[in-house]
Length: 142
Image 1 (cartoon, rainbow, N blue to C red):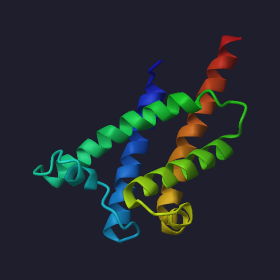
Image 2: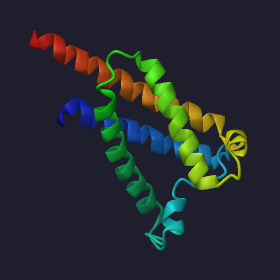
Image 3: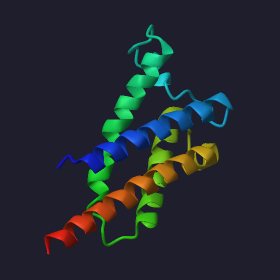
């Protein structure tokens, strides 16, 4: 069920996320590098930084398209609640994986609030669009 709305939503969400991550990294709002996975995993380590950011954009587009499809089934839950829950879980998982804190309390203290806000905004956009389109397509079938 790939439609234009899913594709455009995933593309613009990934673009906004990549640009926001560049901004957060540039002004040291996050302590880690968004393209650090290339150095850590020995994948594209010698590649130009634009290629690393492009690969991140492609990966985010795929992940956000899957998120769009998954949250389209949550029509009975308000999109704000769904997006906040997913954002909090995703940010803690990302920070836990990257930072490797010793305790859950250390993980909570290490969370970047601007990063959490960006992820919550992106997920609210995706969730709102997915739920609206699911309800709209359900009403047009009647």
